[in-house]
Length: 281
Image (tube, rainbow, N blue to C red):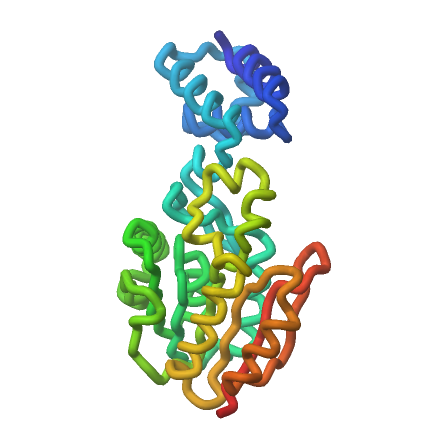
């Protein structure tokens, strides 16, 4: 079987299983299997595949037909300007979350050395992206999941930042290192009801620990805000992601805990997504 034939067969199989973008997905799967760029595959459409590669292709195809996200199948995802290793232990970085990097960089002058804490680091995409763009800063990244910490460490090493980020497997409640200039977080903020309404790609395959923010969606965000009050310096920034309908309650929680809300930025769909706040007391 040649490249063209297996791509066509794979595309038809994914179409039958109601997978969006089947042509792109089979292209990426074949590219992974034979370790060639998509352009090279296009120019060698009549080239025959080895049996072992056909088996690999079919295995990946089957995984995709069951709605497993492409990022987990490929083992990586691009975020901001960089490539990150990904597996099922961590949430897949999303374009909307790049808004946190965009906003945070405005408060981090390029030549200043700031002390950063990333709460619930997951793949490490936030903290690594920040330190790649602001190399004079230093950071600590914490996560409740040991498997997530291992992936984040791998990403720090991939980007030559293993000596600039201290990774700790701990819950924010138990963390007690102080005087941070900035805390950044993409905490779990989906409530129990909305979790069941998510697409199968997310609901079945992504870690619930990184998605579920308790019954009302505010459990983890509250923890981050309350603890950040102790961990931040006066005038330190807390920048974090929220659900599209959480703005008003979040502002109340922040104000109650001594934070001033500088700005709430909207994501690519025009929904409230990123809160920028300052500890004022």
